[in-house]
Each structure stands twice: as structure tokens, then as C-alpha cells.
Image 1: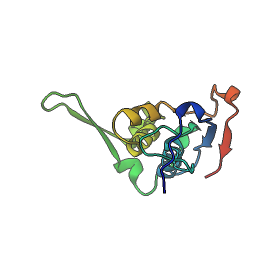
Image 2: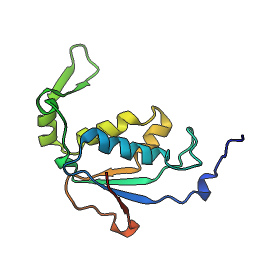
Image 3: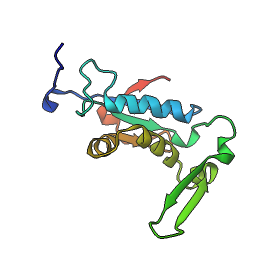
Image 4: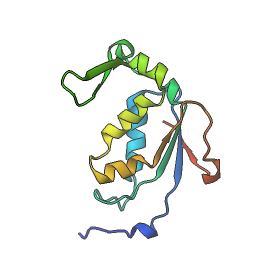
Length: 142
């Protein structure tokens, strides 16, 4: 069986809209990452960008299960010795509501050039409004 290689110019990309209000963080991230990679298409190739565009609205209303609200911690390091800082999920959500969902999606994409390019195809908004109405996104139910 031969592998199909699709010319990137021949691919027609669609836009999808996901409403994340009262949805579980990981499930929204998995669905978005799958669509971004193009794994739902028959001509998916791991090293090619064949995925679609994803718009996620109401990212500030996403849920987490269990006690992650109080116990989940995001770490970052300045690069200097002793420069690690930690922030809990609820504090991060109050400061920047799109950050947890963006980090979850970024963690599910490949590392390197392809992953960085794929991450530019996702648009995450904290509220219900988005400026991509002209692209006529297709709504996805989870």
C-alpha cells in the first residue's frame, strides 16, 4: 500500500468552532489537537500540515475534574538558578483565562517546527465572541 502525499496547495482547510463552556479541559484539548493535526482525514501524514483551523470560545468557563482547581500547578523557569515559579490553576485562570486551554493543546502537538506552525491555527477566546465570522466556522459538539 502506498502512502498518499498531498500537495499543501491542494488542501482546502475548513474552520471549526468549539464552545468550551462547561466542558472538561482535556476533552476540549484532545478534540482541538486532533483537528489541528488532521487525524480525522483519510490522507493524514504525520510530517505534513493537513489539519484544519479551530476557534475555541468561552475558554474561561472550561471545567476540570476532581480537585485540580486547587491542586493543579503551572511551573515556569526564568533560566537563572533558583528562578522557578509556580502558580495554581485557579490563579492562572483568573489572570489569563485562555492560558490553561492553550497549554493543554500545545502539549498535545508535536515538538519542533510543525508543532509551532500547527499552534498558530488555533484561536482561543475567553468570551463568546470571536472575529472569525467571515470564515463561516462549522460548530462541533463534544
